[in-house]
Image (cartoon, rainbow, N blue to C red):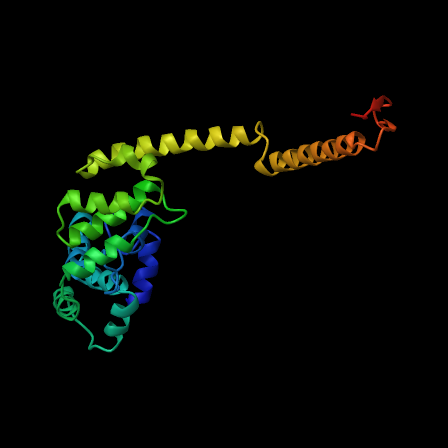
Length: 246
């Protein structure tokens, strides 16, 4: 059986694998892919995840090799194409770990985590898990990675005050849930106020109109109050006579 035909059978729940129909597709689609470029997945973690799944689902040696090959993507897949055909999973694993050794540049990891911000469309929990993986690969203490996570949330410090004090991931997870609820309530309150309050532009218009009317009144009063010898001057607007002679 060719690799392609076996993959097709695997995706349809066949292939001689002891699993329920439909769950076999998880073997390939559910295992994290290894590219050699992703800082969150090392070659050692890729191998460990694959071996754990092989043990759980009782893969044969051939199945483990085929799935391992299919989980190499990007740079790692390009590298594989230029290599000789590996006959066993163990040969492939050794070659992958030699080509993509698990070396961690601590300074680089600090820079990566400091630059990583929570992205639009990413939940706070997803963001925390991504940063957690980076921190674990860099072997940072939990409290260091937690601080980077909090720093990466772009909000006013007063709003993020609820997050400070967390030093472990379970603590941070609880605080993030409270923070999300607080943000949601604040957003709803702000939306409601928008329909009740006068906008700043409207206020500026009202003030401008009032100043104009007031200025016109002052000018008219000044014209009506000017001394013109001993003549009697009648205010055109008020209709009253003013004897302005001193």
